[in-house]
Length: 96
Image 1 (spheres, rainbow, N blue to C red):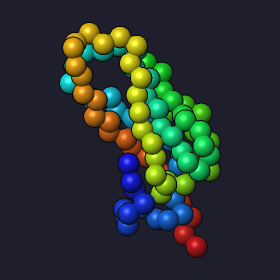
Image 2 (spheres, rainbow, N blue to C red):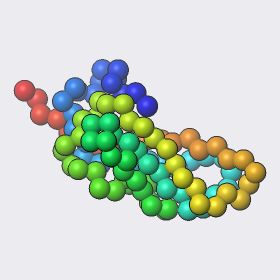
Image 3 (cartoon, rainbow, N blue to C red):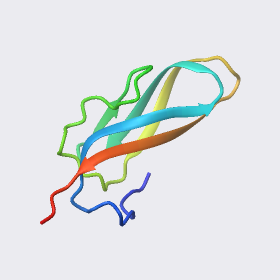
Image 4 (cartoon, rainbow, N blue to C red):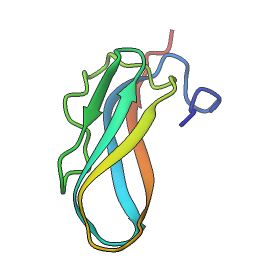
């Protein structure tokens, strides 16, 4: 996911929290969602049934970086599935 090129987000924006909506086709349970920050070299995660990413260091991570997004599913009840993440960044910035 590239948000570096989104001119509407200020370059100085920092993350307050991240939400990952788990929409898709198929049937599964026990889904963990992950987002990787190259800035900290850490993969942050959610737990099944939770859409908010845990342990994000508030007001530290730059919004404009190339985030890596993935998922892990414990039980798949259909032969195939397709997961389409919707990711929401709450951010703030200081006008200088």
